[in-house]
Length: 394
Image 1 (cartoon, helix red, strand yellow):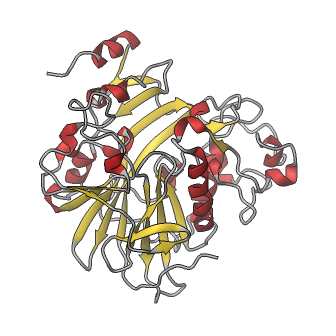
Image 2: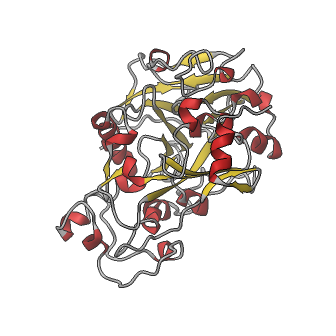
């Protein structure tokens, strides 16, 4: 049973489609390998957090920079048709999306990185020096600073940090929420950063209060998971919210492949032959390739499950593409937030949307988001792409 802090202070949470489209080898992130699901589709979402009481705005994550070919060599070496990342297409930087939505960049107090990987850090050079970077504990001890080129092995760029404050949250104030060390970011119990280790040093999640405690029905939250894990089937289904007997109707509409029969989904479960267990056991195990400490990562996800099973909390992973179909998007209407998710009854759709991705009888549920590598809205031939990686932009 979660013991959640009470408060009537909330934040407005607005979700941005960062226009990041990625495909990656599934075996690095989930196990066991399953025919028809060799590729994982990754969207990437960023969140504008507005505290109306203080007038402050912060970003939680930034997606991928548009000119991803100018990332550090330690990152781009992982790009390629036979590498970890098999497809990348980015149309806009988050800074551009914010400005197009009427948000002046000098009003963003800080960009909070769930972690330092390229698909979450964006391009900080687009923000003024007054915008700080906020990171999790152990970030400065992780060996990635200074950034590239001062540190040739660093996965992040030195230019992200030049002339701006770097704030490392240490989680030493004794606050704990749901087993996570927590930090009350604005000091009014409206928005918490959570220490959620495992994926990489300094990884953090967030808990945003979207309805006050005095509201009819009580308080509500959005849990921003970052890359605490990479696929919702890593922690769903569960004993508290078992797998449906058949595909929910809204999931069928998202699937590319026809479902051959209305039989129980549980019999297709890749991690058990027991149909009863298949309704209550997460679909996949988290694979060690994507986590510096997969055991610690699994512990973090286990803690998150308690939030996911709470009717008053909506869990949003950074790469969960179903969110784009269900929640309001800043890109389409900058005035709309996602605070009304509970009133609109959106939790179930967000909860089971990942079923549109799973294969049935070896047939993929969804086609890849992107084939190969794109620049300026056009695909690159493989050799052209590899050449561009070794040729700095002018």
